Structures are given as C-alpha cells and as structure tokens.
Image 1 (spheres, rainbow, N blue to C red):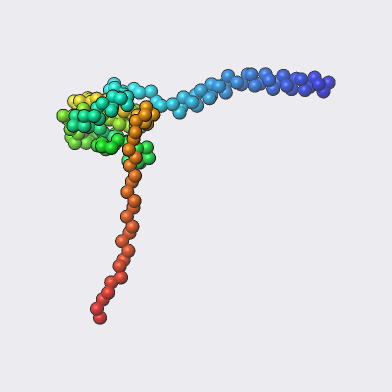
Image 2 (spheres, rainbow, N blue to C red):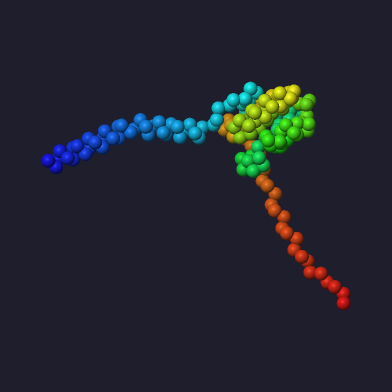
Amino acid sequence: MKSTKTALSLLFALATAVAFAPQANAQQAVAGAAHAAPVYKAKSPKLTRDQLDALLAKPDQVVVIDVRRPDEITAIGGFPVYLSIQAKDLEKNAAFIPRDRAVVTVSNHAGRGGAAADLLASKGFKVAGAVGVEDYEAEGGTLTKIAPPAPKPLASAAPTTSKQ
C-alpha cells in the first residue's frame, strides 16, 4: 500500500511538472521580451555604427543632437561633440539647430532619437537618421564617457580682522 502511495505521489508530481512547464516557458519568454530593445518605429532611418562613422568623418556637414537627459549621458556615455536638447524641449529649441547640416539624433536605443528625427524632418530639417548609443557601442563603437564636474566646496567664511 505504501509503495502505491509513493508511486501515485511521484506520478502526480511528474504530471504537475509536465502540465506547468509550458506555462513557465511562456512566462520566461515574456520576461525575456520585456528586456529586449524596443522595436524601432520611426520613419527616419535607424543608423548603424558604420553609417554614423561615415557621417562623423565629415564633421562640417553633420550636427549630432542628443535628446537624452544629462544623467543618461553621464551614466552611459555619448559622442565627443553634440548639441544637447532633451526630447521634450526639441520643438521650442529648433531655431538653434543648423539647417545647413545633416541632423543625427541620439538616444539610448534610438527610440526617442527616431521620434526626434521625425519631428525635425517634419519641420524641414535634413535628417540623416537616428542612432542609439548603446546599439552603437554593441556594434563595436567607442563612446565618450563624460564625468560630471566635482561639486565646488562651499566658500567658508574667512575670518575678518577688524581694526579697533
């Protein structure tokens, strides 16, 4: 009788494992998809490392606009020369962007950069495309790490001498 109970327990455990395995695999697939880079949806082209490097070889013909927040730029890195205009401020600062150069917009994986490129293209700018710095680095490109300046020490009150 005891061996029958043990056999039934093992059979139940095996059946449970088999029944829930597809669900666990599906959950793992969903979790893995959540960490994957988002799908690029912009109309402007997403540039590869080689395409960007070719544009950067002609610095007098291109302007790079990084639309990320300053904390993202310092944490991840970026390109050595760029115009920093956050995505939310791009439209109101469009007057400061040169119109005689090809525009490359930059974000982490080109999502915001693509949206920014589309916005600028709709305003008549010559847009070359968008690039993600993390994608660029993954393709073998080198980023410039920008260290924020050290905070300045507070000016201590220097002792004053008074003539008495």
